[in-house]
Image (cartoon, rainbow, N blue to C red):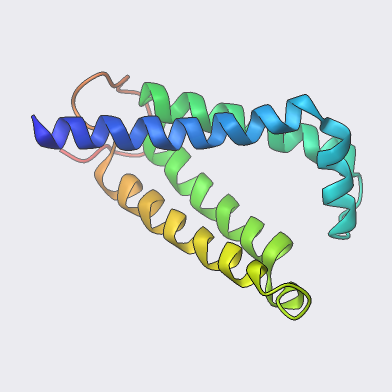
Length: 135
């Protein structure tokens, strides 16, 4: 029972984190685009919308368990991309807090890799995916 509870809590946390991130994007897509543009990326408004819908997909996968391992792996790649793109070494000198934000992404990655390796659990999980789910 404790394992099932821990897995479900982790899935809820992952889902909530991506829902929170995407809700901020949908509430002010212009601000998100501005942040993306400030990092030097082209087509910032387009990328902001892509990021928002991608995060919705991740949240749905974590909350339902469908395509869970795939979502965990993609989210891990995404989180590390975000770490380097928006909080990387070129930002540390100007703001020491950026180093903390950068490192936090790696702790999130650790949880996502664990989720990828172990799957969505047996309870309250849609058994769909392209990757073989752990037994």
